[in-house]
Image 1 (cartoon, rainbow, N blue to C red):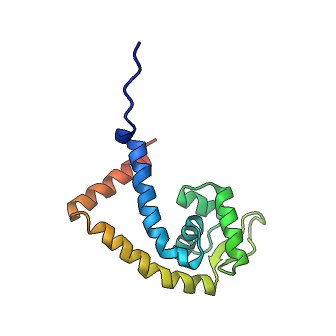
Image 2: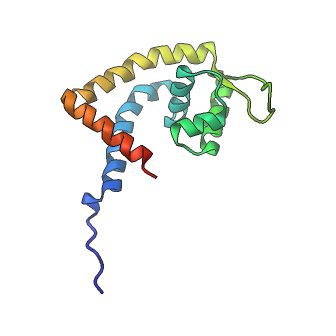
Image 3: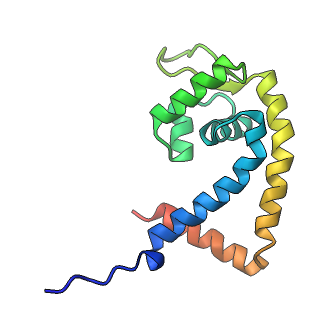
Amino acid sequence: MTSPVFKLEAFLPYRLSVASNAVSKRIAKTYAPYKLSPTQWRVMAVLASRAGMTARAVADKTGMDKTTISRAVNKMLERGLVRRSPSQIDGRSAPLSLSRAGQAMFAKIAPLVLAQERELKALFSDAQLRQLEDFLSKLKNHP
């Protein structure tokens, strides 16, 4: 029996990963001067959109490992970018929010990354962007 032909450059998971990495590297240049890692930036962006989330909730929202998120949160706590509040329900799952310093940093970075997003979106027509959104939703929601 012959093995199936495997062409890495045509393999969809590989292509998605390479495209995602290229976009992430481009965006990282925007927040790198603020000494944020990609994970810290994701935590900051999530908490800016919804304060009071636990590290577990941030991990679920980003699709990242909770341990990776917890390490990033701890570094952000050390830098004073994030606050941890005592939980009313469970001592192990403390709600997180951006501190004033974290909010100020996000306010500086957000317009820059939104400009990056506009540049990326300009590569596509409105119809292509709608298709891309549909494709991404299908991939995310596929069992």
